[in-house]
Amino acid sequence: MAVSVTTTLPAIVNVGVPQSFQVCATTDGHVGEPVTGLATLSNPSQANQFALFFIPPEGQPQRINFNASGQAGPSPVFPLMNACANFQVTFNAAGAYGYTLQLISQVTGQVLTTLSSTEFVFQAPPAYV
Image 1 (cartoon, one colour):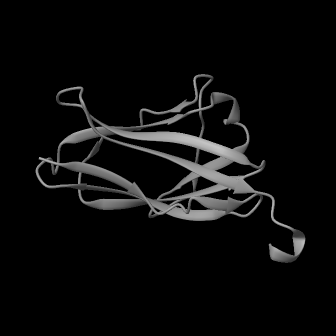
Image 2: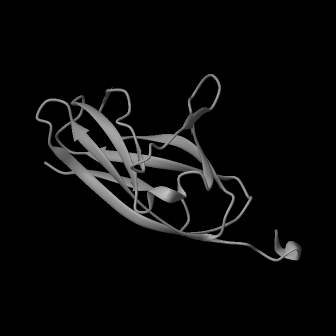
């Protein structure tokens, strides 16, 4: 039974430009299983170089903070389903930002899926922003 997590965040973004994106989960056999999400930065020292927000369907955006180990989460428990969640990130420094997203079963404690990616953030010339 496969579980996957994907993101629509482009691999290349500009400093200072808010970027809306989605994180999506799909499953063919774990629907409804209680899970948590965990985000981990490859370089924990970059945690203060961007602002990341969860955008709920209703209510105010919620800032996602990373600890000294470069982790955000685990998130509150939620039922796994074929669905997407909305987020927004704004980077305030150029660089390569590596990260890993995991969905963890609260039934077995096992990692159901992992996504690793790197964002390349550039300072665009003023005429192109």
